[in-house]
Length: 133
Image 1 (cartoon, rainbow, N blue to C red):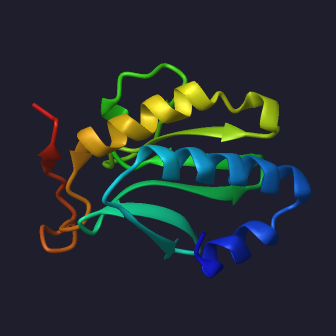
Image 2: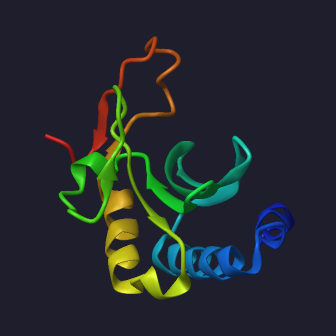
C-alpha cells in the first residue's frame, strides 16, 4: 500500500479504517494493470489514466464509488445524480461489506468504462470507452 493511501486510511476512525482496509484489499486483489493514488483527497484507482473506482469518507459513512457504475446493472449501487455515470454504495460497518459483491463490481469497473480522462478536452461530454454500447 502506498504511503499516501496508508496515511489516508490511518486518519479515519477505527471502524472506517477496517472498512477501508477491506475495500483496499478487495480492489487490489481484483484489478490488474492499474495505478492508485490520492486524487481529490481520497484513494482512486485508474486504468490508463481513467478513474474507475475509489472510496471516501462522507458524513454518513464510507462511500465506495465506481465512475462508470451506472452501467453495471447492480441494484445495490446507488446511481449518482447529474450528467456523470457514477454509482456508489455507502458503508457504516464492516459487516455490511460483501466482498463477493465488491469483487464483482471491481471486475466490472475494468470492463465497463466511460472516458473521464478526456472529459475536460471534450468540454464536459462523456463518451463510452469500453464495454458500453
